[in-house]
Image (cartoon, rainbow, N blue to C red; front, side, top):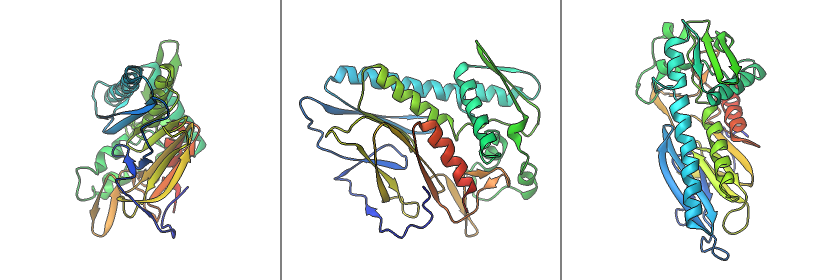
Length: 313
């Protein structure tokens, strides 16, 4: 679903009736948490993976909910330690430092995510490219206030860098090697969705059937909200993030949005955001400001939203 300029009047965000889920794109409609029987909601917010993650569990047993939430956040923290490009000792950090010259061993989970990223790259003819780490570092939209020089950007444009990533998987995990000096892994368009799926699986393994896991706008809704209905999830208006453009009812589904209004800088009348077009190695230019995708898994929704945004006009 794309949302360039919706004609529908947006819904006002009323803090009395909406529960904000972290710093992400979504909000979940509040319900009478004084629940049926003893069921009530247990919530926790934690900064992780460069954003605010929130887990909300509907359960009668507070201790069981606490243990399950601990397990979910453990998954998120492990994913960050292994797959963040900002950590020099993560699998991704080590690969970006060393894999141009030698094979770098990686954990099975990292190999799984890279393999999925390469499948998305092939399926989208490179519109999804997990190897744009050098371009991401060059633009660094959270710190820059002016664009980098055109020659440095052009040097990374249209290279199909994902094709220069070699991945071998075995029973111990995997290994990567880069065949192009321009390659640097950036799994930001897929690893967060993978982590949300695994965090939701951790909740389920601890006996939780009804919950929300939201990491900066990548979200999985399990089962029912506390009132027994589907979870109501609001998508923020790309033109006015304090308002909602729509609400979705989701149950045992994942939702992800890619938008240009969360990480960006403005310069000379143009917005430069973090969603890079592999063909230009620059922030995708177009009239579309956000893309929302609902899929069976958050990893699929995350990757699909990223690819669709860079293809939208």
